[in-house]
Image (tube, rainbow over all chains, first blue to last red):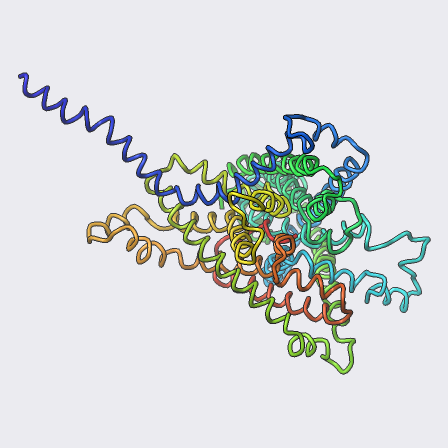
Length: 305
Length: 293
C-alpha cells in the first residue's frame, strides 16, 4: 500500500511537471531560428527606429519633441498628399477592379478572357517601381508616345498650360499607381465573386427577386467586407510605394519621398524627426492592415470556396 | 453562370411560372445583352489601360535607328545590364535558399509540435505588409551602421543585409504558400510513418516534407525571384549593383535604351507570372504586396 503511491509519485511527480515543460521548451527550440532571424533583421531594427523616435538627437534625453515637431507644414502636407493619393487610387482602383472582375466572371464574356485577365492582373500588380515609372514617362511624359499621338491626331496639346496636366505631379502619380492597384483588386475579388453560391441566387430568384434585388440584398452585403477590406489593402499598397514615386516624381511631397530624402541626406537635420516620420507611417499601415485582416475574417464566414 | 438553365429548373407553380417567365423573357435578353455590352466596355477599358504604356514603351524603344539598335546597345554593348541581372539573380537565389530553410521547418514545426507559436509566427510573417521596404531599409541602415554589428561599411556586409532584407520581404507569401501546402498533406501521418522507419528530423524534412511541397515552393521561389530582380528601394539605399538601381540610372542617362530594358523586364515578369500560374493551376492565385512599388 505504501509502495504503490510512492511508485505512482515517483512516476508522475518528476515526470508530469517536467516532461511537458521540457517538451515544450524543446519544441519551441525548433522555431527559434525563425524568431532569431526575424528579431535580428526586422523586429530589433524597427525597434531601434521606434526607440530613436523618443530620444532627442541633441542631448539624448527621453522626449516627445520629435512627435511634436511632426506638426509642421511640410510634414503635414506630405502625410496629406500620401493619404489623398492612396485614398483616390484605392477607391478608383477598387471600383474599377471590382467591375472588371464582375464583367469577366458574371458579365457574359467568353471564358478564355477570364484566364487572360487573371494572368495579366498577376503581371500588372507585379509590374511596379522603376519600369512602371519609365513606361508611363514614355506614354504620357512630355515627349511620350500618347502625348504626341494626341497632338498629332487630334491637335490636343496635353501639356498646354490650359490643361494644367503633368505626369510629374500628384495626378500623374495617381494615374500610374492605378496600374498596380486595380489588378490587385481583380486578383482578390475574382475568387470572392466565385465564392457566391449558385444556391443563393436560385433561392432569391425563387422568391421572385430580380437580378438587381439579388445584388442589392444578397450578393453585395456578402461581398461588402471583402470589397471594403481590399480597398483598405489598396490604400496601404499605395501608401507604402516608394520606388514608383521616387523615380517618377521625386519632388511630389509624398511621405516615402520625404523619408527617402531624410535617409540619404538628413534633410531635417534631426535624425529623431526622421524616425518619428517613419513611425507615423508604420502606424497608418498597421491600422490599414489590421482593419483588412478583421474584415477578411468576417468575409471568410460566407465565402469559402 | 447566369445562363438560362436556371429558369428551366424553377417551375414551382403555374401562376409563378407565368409570372416568373414572363418578366425574364421580356427583360432578361435585353438585360443580358445590355450588360454584356457594358462588360465588354469595362474589359476594353482595362485592356487599354494595361497595354497603352507597354505599347508606347515598345514603340519608343524601336525609335532608335536602325531598328532594334536600342536592344542591341543594351544586350551587347552594356556590360552593366548583364552584370546587374546576374547580381540580382544571385541575390534572389540566396534569398530563396535562406527563406526556404527558415520557413519550411518553422511552418512544419508549428503545425506538428507547437501550434501555440502559430499566432506569433503569423504576426511576424504579416509584418512586411505593415513595414514598407523604405522603412525596413531605413531601420536596417540605422541598426547595422555601427558597432556591435556593423554591416553597412563593406560590400560583404551590405550583400548580407540585402539578402536578409529580401528574406523578410518574402515572409508573407513564402509562409502562406508553405502553410497551405502543409495543410494539403497529412503531416502527422507522414511524419509518423517516416519515424517508424527510422528517419531522423532532417531526413523527414528533406525526403518527405520538401518533395510534397514542391509546387508551393517553386511558385514561391519564382515570385521571390521576380520581386528581387525588380526591387529598387532596398537595393538603391544599400548601394547594391542590382538591376533596379541600374535601370533607374539608365533612365536618367539614356533615352531609348531604358525603354528596351523596361520591355525586357516586363517580359521577365510575364514569364515568371506565367510559370506561377501554370504551376498553380486550379489553386488560388498568389497575391503579393511586398514587392518594389
